[in-house]
Image (cartoon, rainbow, N blue to C red):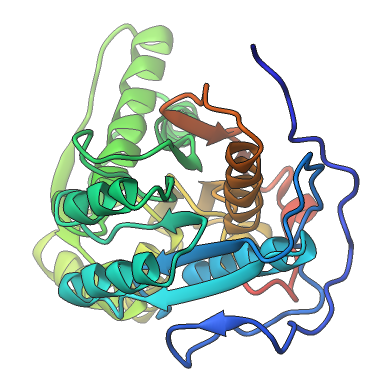
Length: 346
């Protein structure tokens, strides 16, 4: 039997102050932006009052993670449930301990954003043994883990859209490419990179009949502004002929823009991101010619979907796909204004 319990009744345009009864396992809370649309209300055949949604983030040291937490918190509370959050503080040992604490608190569903795809396999099995369903969000986990579904943006498709756009933009002109990545081995970053490269090469084959993929260097940014700045400074010294930067995330390149500007090369380098649709990136796309495109990875929508799927599970649904994607979307100068919200948290 296949029933559809998830039926959005409405999307609220404004969110109110977070309820004071919210439980959290740490004192760090995401800044609430009252202009951000968060928190759908879902139908449920069971009473959700008193049900606990636990969420463990790898860190809160980035606007994306803050917006994701805010979306999960708001959606949880608007559906009458209790929100319990834990922060891994960018330390895998602390994230494992934080998840173990959520299990001890007896949450009814665990939403987990893994810092490492392998290190958290054990705690997912502990959650299952305790009767707690696990939903992986934003990132990915080793398939040996025990989880219901992974909820994320379509990283491969988004990367392909961005790569295709770049190949069309340059045509037969020579690209000297620098690749800015997050962390070595990160599964989401690898998928986005794969999408970028596939998009470039497939479009070149279609339009040119050959592949000219000239990646001069790759650098890791630790998904941070400072990391992007340092990486780009080093690249510009070692490879002064770079004219294209492709990146796995907006955050990897926002710091790099400062290095590019300081080198006086904003007219010489084109930036293309496989994700995330961060407001600063969209503003650059609208107002400049050096940031060509990015793709949508909405923390607000992922948070809503994750809580919605948890509610479906509580209502008896079990036939979830192993991966659930939000729709792929490319943001360029032509449509950037539609997606730009200067008051958005992310």
